[in-house]
Image (cartoon, rainbow, N blue to C red; front, side):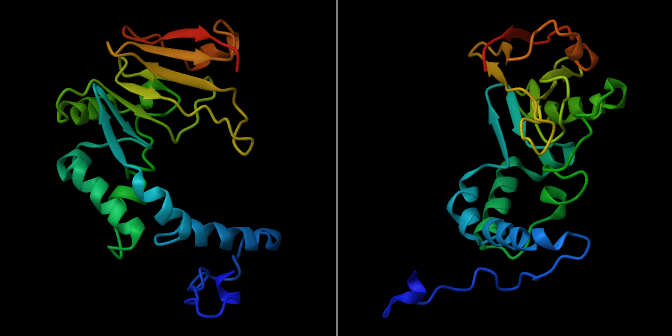
Length: 217
């Protein structure tokens, strides 16, 4: 619209620098890919208007929230510094940000060490170490890795995995909510029958595990 109005500064082409084709991707999806990258990349209209307000890591009471999870080296780097670095990258104040924070396999966004299907495959000792370096932290709440059985805990309640794959593009999972009360007790509000046999494959019965309550979606 601004381009059609005389006297207004012509806006920058939001597609500048974005390729017009994506090898390995069906051509029918190319325009959608371009639009998504343009909107969400650093300095993009969605990123600068909405994303920069969100924290990469946040501590509320005894709970630490991160999309994939935190390793001890992330904590050593500094949670406030992490939030500042990612925010400045999204808004364009920094040209780049460490891949250890947002891109690498073990970054805060992509980490899966505490979210694997089998509790034996989860690095509980690493998680305990990371939490021990955050004053007052008792648990880490994370998403990213879909839990086909619904919200669950491992590592004696220190890892709380809440990604239930609700999107139709994932597994179209039923809605669930993790409720954390002021006294730090946990409840899982689930629209799936609590005693459904399908839930028992991944729900690890922990000593400090959350209480499940069935509700209507």
